[in-house]
Amino acid sequence: MATVIGRPGWDELSGTPERDLLIGLDGADQLDGLAENDTVLGGGGGDTAQGGFGDDAVFGDAGGDLLFGDTCDGPLPAGYRPGEVPGSNFVLGGGGDDTIIAGFGVDTVLG
Image (cartoon, rainbow, N blue to C red):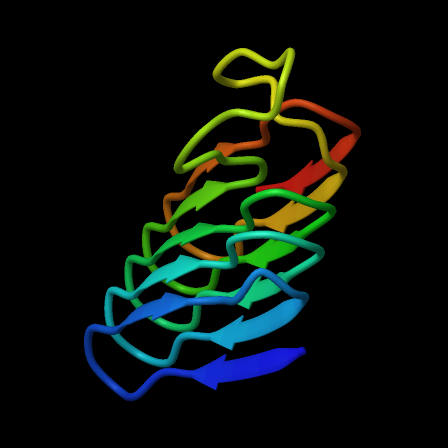
């Protein structure tokens, strides 16, 4: 499991093919957990955060965040179409005006 922590200001953080913890601090960060069961914490600012493949927990914070549950940046698994990547996700928007896209699977979304 990798833990990746950003710095104050804008950061672009990516996970690994394994389970990860990504933490964005203040600033408009871009966070991508990639594969496995990730925890992605946006922090302050208007963040773009996605869990990727797997059962993920994606959290926004103060600011207008764009949060994705299931995403696929690359080849789709055999038999799946865009928007149908499986996985169970917990997505929490936090304070501010958020846009939340849960994806395909059993998701829990709190704005």
